[in-house]
Length: 291
Image 1 (cartoon, rainbow, N blue to C red):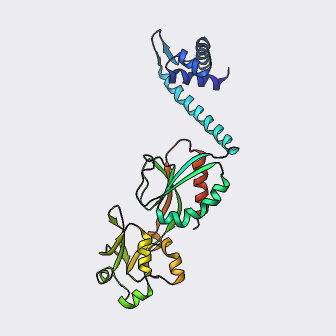
Image 2 (image 1 turned 90 degrees about the vertical axis):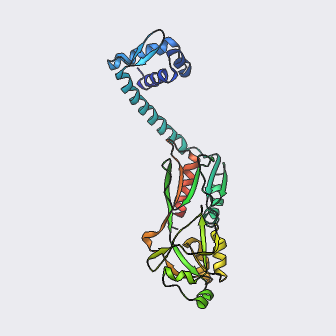
Image 3 (image 1 turned 30 degrees about the vertical axis):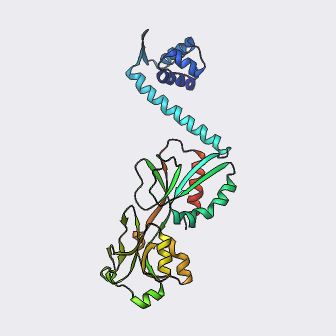
């Protein structure tokens, strides 16, 4: 007998709630379904289900065997899907969310090459600093900076970044370089706030939350103001690389490597990850992992 076929029919009987419905789902007649189940029971030497004219129910052996059948059927489907995907090209709509500044600096430069590699994909890239519930809002994946992913999400690391305090050389010449957290009360501080909360600054090994003379949920506004001499700013290093190179900003103090922030790509936990999502994640991990 075809054991795999018999296992499929047995699972269909339970899923469909009867022999006739299982036959329709499997393309078999009701007598053939009954014959298949009987042959399977004979092969196993156990009764898998109790059958009456009105209902059927699994025996204890039947429940255990059904779990085994589902495991085998799922694994076969997974392997067949993976083999089929090797020859397939991802297609359809791929919806991705990312923070505005990180997306502009690091995701956007990769989009052209990614789309050229996968021409059958339509990419919808939404940049926002608002926390997005990717399941509720229908996103396939999102880039997240810091924090812990929800238990319903899978996360893969992209890179790490370090927070630092920066200012223009002209500001430091005028106001001096702060030596401690308590010194911040005498400085003009440009504070990034998300969800009503500001990340504490680090100076001389201690953390504190300064009073903001300029407060914004957009890091580029704060970065630009700091480069123009408006005050001190605490930002992740990816914001200020160009400003440091050009001399528009000067590093006051950077957080230690062990306090660096993880940047991850997260996606809903699924048994079988769609190919379009897998290729995007693999592409971004490869491109950004050594940033």
